[in-house]
Length: 192
Image (cartoon, rainbow, N blue to C red; front, side, top):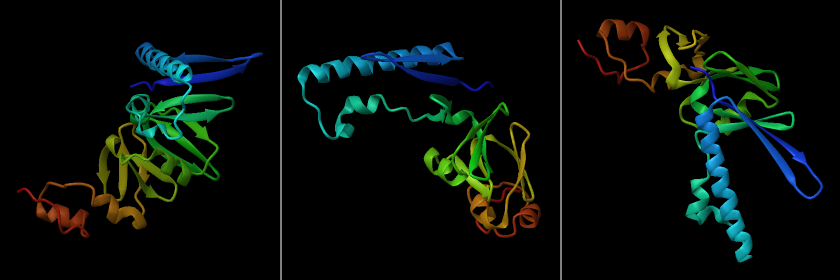
């Protein structure tokens, strides 16, 4: 699965701005083109009416343009679009954070892990130790205190985050096996 990446660069001209968009996925590029055309068409209508509202969040057309399945990452003078579904995990690296995609491509961000995790604002992501946040959708297996993702990256689930992590799953198996591996879980569904 290859990540969809959109790069947007801005160039200032005498009385205007010029934007250049590069994308490695034609369907996404066409979708973005239609959304931008819709946005600019509506902007022209607003300009012609000469009435700007302070808060456009109540305008239904405003919500049609909101992109919720992706984040834009600032890289130099570009904004790079990354789909949330392409992110496998986040890794702390001092005051930086690496966003690791499912294809193992890394995008470094000049922000700490806590801030990037908060900015994602998606329930699919969970912190499992001080320096790792994972996408729950890519869990391949859990063995003891280790979690393995679909891209074969494995991480330790620290004691601090373990109870919350395991509370997210319904575990089905023999009672003896469950008690052995998950002694802190009393609410597990057991099928024999």
